[in-house]
Length: 154
Image 1 (spheres, helix red, strand yellow):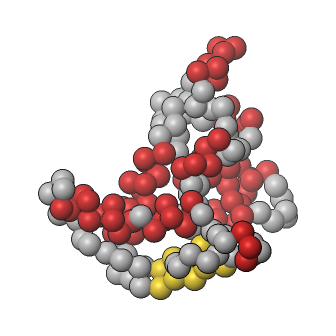
Image 2 (cartoon, rainbow, N blue to C red):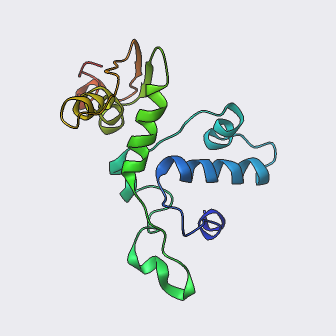
């Protein structure tokens, strides 16, 4: 992780899809035959975003903090809204949409906000944005039923 962060262009604003791309590229170059999700996403060119509330626990935690500029290093700016804009732009280019979520809670909720996000842009901001919804959905939730995170509808 240090190598990825040290190689980050400090003029580029960081968000989860850009960071995951950089991690995947590093792993593809340095991990040999070992398997990994971010390495595989580089091979298959699929998007990998982190939920906004995961910033406190993500692998680059601290990159966006003021203390990141110590020892002559440049501060890295982090903007989770770049993820939302990228996610929406990617989905708006598609004819049909499907969603695969693993687990419950915030990641699912965040990705499902795409429809209302487009509706707000269209109706409140007057943007010419298509009002799209998901056509397909699959949810895999391995948590125990008594946690109740899997009882909510997709």
